[in-house]
Amino acid sequence: DFPATARMVLIAIGPVSEITQRLDLHLLTGRLEAGSVLDAQVIGQDRRYAMTALEVAGQMLRMPEVDAPPGSTLRLRVRARDVALALTAPQEISIRNVLRGRIAAIEAEPGAFAEVSVDLGGPLLRARITREAADELALGISMPVFALIKSVALDRRLLGPSALVRSHELRAGMSDEHQPETSPAEASARRAR
Image (cartoon, rainbow, N blue to C red):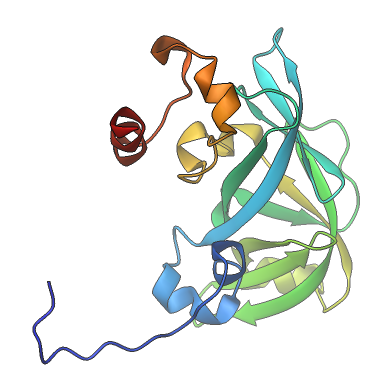
């Protein structure tokens, strides 16, 4: 509750995926938890390794298994601190996700860090790196880069609240024990239906 005399100021308005990508809002979005929200489509399940294959802007991304059929849309939250950048495609590494993109923006902060926005061909992905790394790589606007994201960084807990919401028909055919994990608010709303 706000006092009647409280004054509120609208800072930004728009889709969450666009707001979270804006480097100029980092003081409001938080530095350690700043990141991007990406819409991804499930393209398959790898039961052997308990991994889910996703498509983001025409590129494949793998994450720990999510109970969602092919064609489902998930909203992923990727923390900027979980993204590394490379100038060449890395080889023989344990990181499963290597996405091609171009530098859209670089904002050096006071101190050790810089925020980099990478255009993946539509959606923007934020990377939090050191200013030293940005200088050594000589990063510049429009430069092609590879964004590296560890699969383990794409934890189910980082899926947005609507990430596992699918069509009513899908939910109608599932018993409660087979329903995907939801937030307490979603679970309460589902029970109320």
